[in-house]
Image (cartoon, rainbow, N blue to C red):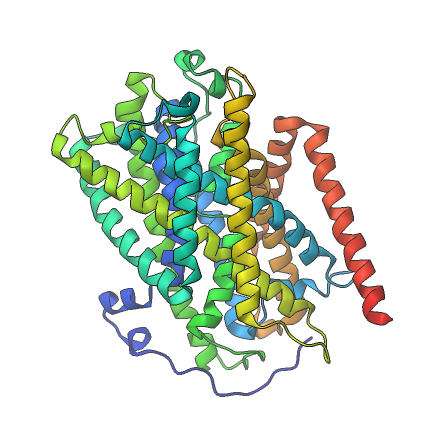
Length: 500
């Protein structure tokens, strides 16, 4: 158990002490980053896709997923505010070779981050290829060339950015799009009764009879399709690990030692900021999700259209153009900004994750790596890796001769099953262990939060394993088990090297 230490905490901002709810909005920062990371893919693409395929029947599922992910975020960030210790730092004390489980997360991130970046770049490319009328070029593969071009632009911006720039950009995007989507929902006039029923009454997911018109969708088991929504909606496990790190940049709460048990201590009162920021983030995501599910059910379903392939974003223009054609250009500007912000944010998630990993492995006497160098390593790895993913997809598309080469969603699914589903289960389970192992009883989570966290751990782990099995059976599960073993081996080798 870590010793309790008295210290002077970072002073609370006036907004936290105010009784005016509007003043609390000034606290909203890190949560806006997390919300913006999911708006581009989670809402514009996958929520509208869910609405087209399942109408309103999955809204309750979206609400449940977002509740469980909020629990994950709050529990993880709560420990960070009270102790200043990142999850990676705590996981170093798990049984086995020191740091083997953080090593697993790093190994999987080396593969998953470039895939996510490639997916978002390719998605942005599909929009630009449609707007420029070049979608049919290069055997309908022009969207991948556009994706590579936009990735280069984003990389130039990231090189000159940082957390402060990221927060400003994402706050503007979230605020503007939130107003637009609420207005859109009112104008669309959805079936309000079916919407409310879908929100509160669990219903089974079943493909519509016309799904055969879309072979790529029909070939995916319903469970794989729905679990993909779990992974995308609300963000991924790595986003939440980065969120905990962003709290360092914001200087919320404790800088390193465990806060005293005094409930009035400033560090503990900083949890108000976490409540405000995290709840606003997930409420914004839920609003976006409901709007785009309703739009998909109202517009795309009756047209028997599903976002996918090279139409990930263009079909959604029908949400506004039939009613108000003049809104179509505004939709495309908003969609471009949303995906652009998601791509930018995904790349920016990598540096804090790598920095926390290196800090966790840091031992006394070892020369630390400068933060600027770590940032460059992370940014260039995911950027160049994402470029390679898109370039490989373009080459395969152009030269394979396949009638239906793998689409962006098919490319994303395996990585998403870990980053957005299984990883969340592990983080939830280990947050329970961390809370009990490192905090005195007076500072541990209240029992309702522990119960919700345990349920979230079970749900995400079960869904992740089920998704892996339905995706490719023993191959997927075997690959994951092999990665666990590799993390154990690498950590054991590093330990021997340090000992010598």
